[in-house]
Length: 286
Image (cartoon, rainbow, N blue to C red; front, side, top):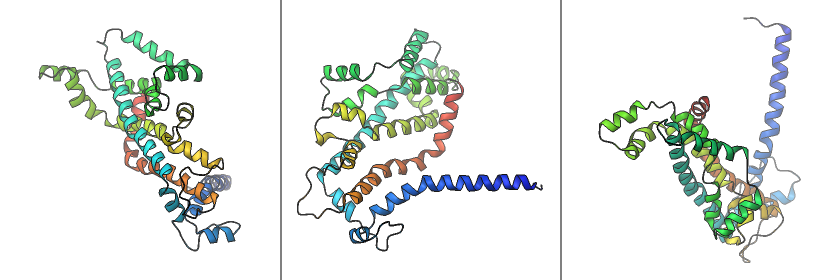
């Protein structure tokens, strides 16, 4: 099919504009990555480094030899793994129960959940709640207040409504109770939704920043995002080894950004095939 001159011009302009947007988007990420692997001497001798002549891991050695960085990565990993598992158990169980019409008080519970989506208590009531529970400087203060999301419950409920209740009835005939049917039949069929919302929760927990800033006064319990913000504010790393010669501050910041970003980027390819399917199916029947 032949295209007119106007169509070819239009497609050419689209390609040019999208190429510029892609370049503007990708270049900062590329620059952060390159600087984190540049030798100190080369970084100090050049105005800008687009491709290092000699690759170096000195920034990463310095950061990963620092106890503060190791602890913060461990805290963030704990939040991402344990927090995600707890949130998925609560969210999926609640969404499944609400998807079954035989549940007593189903409409009232659903209205209460929708109310939490429309109205938020705010920062001060949340802080007073966490303090009254004795969770200040406790890592569970970053998990329990955000254990579930009303919006995710509604979306996952739509997914479970596509699973026929006849499967539950067949399981009951075979002698399964509600819990057994949930774990052995419904849960395996729900892996696309579990993977999609698990990825959402993992990203949120890994990027925990503001709540950690409010509830964590002990720097030894800071997640990686708070430590990174502290570094970007020109504050040195706590417990830095005085015998090690630190690379320039900018190189350390770039390396810390890469360390904080890589884990989540590595998870996406493994969950991508479930991600799109889980979100689309869950959003059709919200």
